Length: 103
Image (cartoon, rainbow, N blue to C red; front, side, top):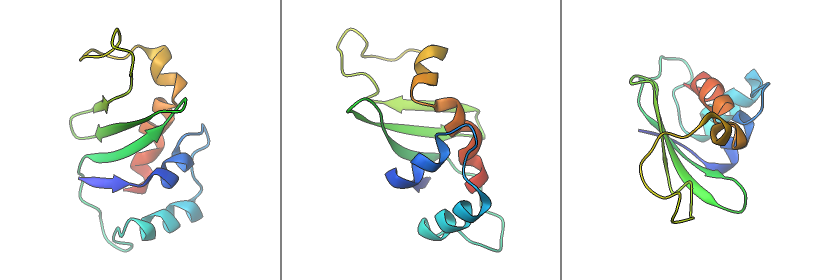
């Protein structure tokens, strides 16, 4: 698995995504090879949203995204697919799109 630290995640949460200079800097920070192909592995990161931290795992090979601890309300706890509105609230669509540029 690859790990992207909390501060780096912010760069991937906008529609524009990070610029190439930011990507190069982030690759250095997470110790990715600069001149060779990076193996495809699941990516794990912590997301902060509405005064709450939760874990996200993105698996591009299987075309899946998992969240752990997204909801703290017991009525919303459990395993279920997230609806599109919830994913858009914490910018999951931009994270999915831009995070793969790092690798």
